[in-house]
Length: 380
Ligand code: ADP
Ligand code: ARG
Image (cartoon, rainbow, N blue to C red):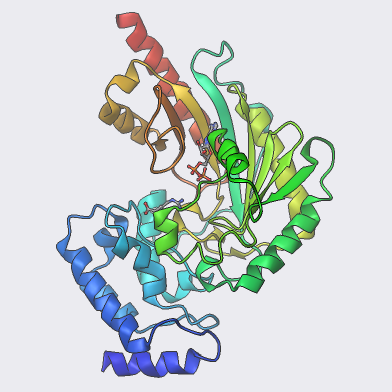
């Protein structure tokens, strides 16, 4: 019965979107994947919240414009049982069509974005309110603030055609070429980039990595490297990633702990782009992104920091960070290990609070960690 329903729906959708699988195959993969997830000891939010009644309710649904299925949303989490989250939105409508699974995950990740909650209006405030976190340069190597944006009227990675990638790249780079003063720079497409140049940019933490298995399993790396690339300003303090996880990632970074200055630079860059590009947003969820962890403000403000005493016990550091709504990542970003005692620590919550509050939460939390590090040091 279910399979007949999905077959009917998907057959109607064939003209909108050519599926690489037959409808009954999609349903079979969903059923088998769900069973594997349910039997596993996965710690993902997907496993925690995808109950059988919700799964059964959603497995035959598709989004109205792009005909995305539940499999499009959860295949990364089904393939990668070690996912933390395990779900992506293949198109902006998926947050609505599959709300029964997205909403509890969003609520859990962003802490307290419950039923009826609405993301607040954007408010960036002033960078000057966030003084240098480490004026003596004892702990912080560098500071980075990034946000993501999706271009209106385009779906997310799994639904983009090769031509869409090219169109997006063309639209975005046209606007990037108009940036001036500190933000002026040059766009480097990934297609045709020498491998050693690419690796150097990755090693310097400017460029995104290649071959992220979570994104690959979500069908987010198709036609790679078509349409992907990086824009870099002259001072290498302002960067824009094109068509990696999101259509656009706007990044400001520099050595040291001057969060306010880094944040201000990101705001000005974002505002310049927003002048000419229309971004996808939702009255309830704020800015729309491919991954639900990035919704709302989309802001991740991070430091590369050395905390030799606190870092002796990673579990304790994580626990302390969690109390301040901070997340600990490795030196080369998500899903990597810390090298030479350098941690990437950033705000976890991006939704249900303003940009100013998200960055403020990070500023306060990092200050507290530095203070705790100093106290540990004094004990010795
Ligand atoms: P994102 O920040 O876009 O979610 P990642 O966690 O993969 O993605 O990080 C992307 C890159 O940014 C990685 O190379 C990471 O080391 C680098 N990075 C993050 N924070 C900082 C920082 N404060 N200083 C320098 N590099 C950073
Ligand atoms: N899907 C991956 C996981 O669940 C990443 C989630 C958050 N990170 C991201 N880059 N969107 O672990």
